Length: 80
Image (tube, rainbow, N blue to C red; front, side):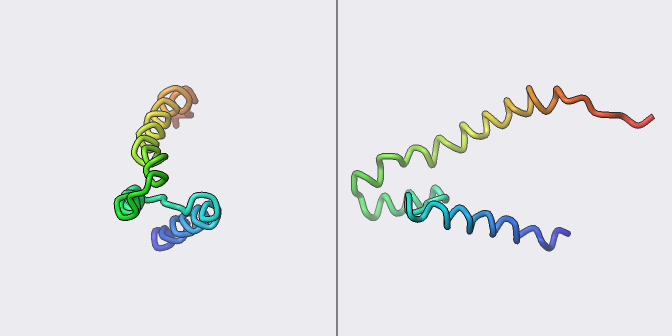
């Protein structure tokens, strides 16, 4: 089953690109976005660049809170 692991990951990346290329030009990789911002050195490239660096930390914090509050609150059945 692990052989098929790259398929859903690649499909998810494909869908993100397909959905957001017309809107933002799709930079889902912070290093790729930083490189483009440095090369083009235009003001509009830096306007929302903080999202690529702050967003993952906010997402990780929200996921940790969700896990601590919601997931741990669900009782699990134990085998006797």
